[in-house]
Amino acid sequence: MEAYELTGAQASEKLRRKEISSRELTKAILNRLKSVEPQIEAYLTISEDLAMKQAEEADIRLTSGMDITPFTGIPIAIKDIICTRDIPTTCASQILKNFLPPYDATVIERLRHAGAVFIGKTNMDEFAMGSSTENSAFKITRNPWDKERIPGGSSGGSAAAIAADAAIVALGSDTGGSIRAPASYCSVVGLKPTYGRVSRYGLIAYGSSLDQIGPITKDVMDCALLMNTIAGYDPRDSTSVNSPVPDYSCACGRDVKGLRIGVPKEYFLEGIDPEVENLIRAAIAQMESLGAIPVEISLPHTEYAIPCYYICAMAEASSNLARYDGAHYGYRARGTDNIIDMYSRTRADGFGIEVKGRIMLGTYVLSAGYYDAYYLKALKVRTLIKRDFEKAWEKVDLIATPVAPTPAFRIGEKTTDPITMYLSDIYTISLNLAGMCGISIPCGFTSAGLPVGLQLIADIFKEDTLLTAAYAYEQSTEHHKRKPPL
Amino acid sequence: MSKERITYDDVRHVALLSRLRLTDEEITSYAQVLNSILDYFAKLNELDTTNVPPTSHSIKIQNVFREDAVMPSLPVEAALANAPDTQDNCFRVPKIIQEI
Image 1 (tube, rainbow over the protein chains, first blue to last red):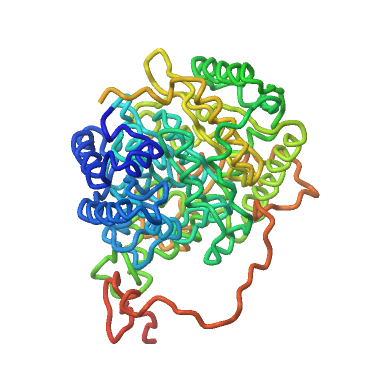
Image 2 (cartoon, chains in turn yellow, orange; image 1 turned 135 degrees about the vertical axis):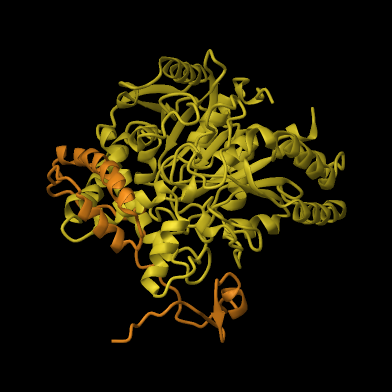
């Protein structure tokens, strides 16, 4: 096995045993990256010098045998929406093209403290608005399993990097499915934590009541270990919840006997690719053979989740993106003679088409005369969606669903009509509205060799239940060991 | 909410509110796209939400306070480091107040 193929847990073990140094591991990742990047283009910034410096520091720590964490010396890729001090952070937008954050996000502080090695910042849909990474202002990222296809979005770069072994672990962010969908399309593991589980301090905001940072990894154990490091209360994030963080790695290996798994009938109606449906149902049957109990349930407001989500997300985005005005940082349009002109030209030049569209719709649904009809209505529907889940938790411990209605689609296939793209979020979106946690794990491949992910959903702060079931299923299959043809 | 159409003037107004300078062609093109999305949003009308309270926060947290004590904040040089234009430790921008 090549060093770049190691999981985080395997690499950490080898580092502790001094079978490999962090410098060697980091070099192996950087070489792998150089060989696959021309094909997949997962990264926007590669921080090679910093990575080697961090690897050297990690090696000192590893040699001393003191203060070693599971991520000491481990190369990590970071979605370019998370602030990293002095490393360009662009949100894949022209408006932040040369932005160097003067501070680290809380999750980044924790990872620096743990001794992780930062390989670089990964590509994404501009300001996290998209489901395919095609909305990046800078480049298209290609799915390592089929380079004519999208890796999913908006954390497409991180998922592609993990699938291609161009990083050992990665961070993404999820507002409507942006960790889970790329994980599904790229055959890797992606977890969206409960809202408030992981600090949003330093996460550039898209939809503040929906956003969460989460792990994208090669297997469930790495996901659990990364959650241990990034989860937890942060007084700098007023939406952060002061609830203790269990050792999530202990959840891996627990029994699933008697775990009731809800299968929502609304998630298997029209629009789902038959091969995807078969793989999901097979995965559920597999879990049954491990002792879990499938139970049919209903989430009756599922078909309203997409319009509800987009109204809420666009409204919040219109407010969050008002700060990009050319005054304090980022791009500024030149040759304007008054402030309004400067704002309007800066934002028109700096934002892409989808971002401008969402800002305008968000502004419209919040404006006088339309607020009640759209935004307030959506907030009420949000309550109904949340209640669907609360009723379900009375009957089941977990919910199993597809992640996406199809495997990865072709680049350019869904870009002519925004609604076609929005509809691909149907299975992931409700969780963000309800604040629940969810994970996508590989559950097989279509006849064309394209990955399909299984989504498991759990109630708030029940990531351990999620990881128990995900780990049990993963370990009873070989899907997570398969590598793309690169 | 009725299936009203968002007109060219509506888009121009919204673009003004959101400080986006658009060309005439862009306004026309956005009007079409935004219309079809708003038509799709109208689907929420199928639901009766009388007596349903709105949810702004998915997790119940309220009134998160901290002590009103001075804490270190970002140093001035760091705050100005990404500024497109500065003068005397301030951000410098085009004229805000017009002469009458």
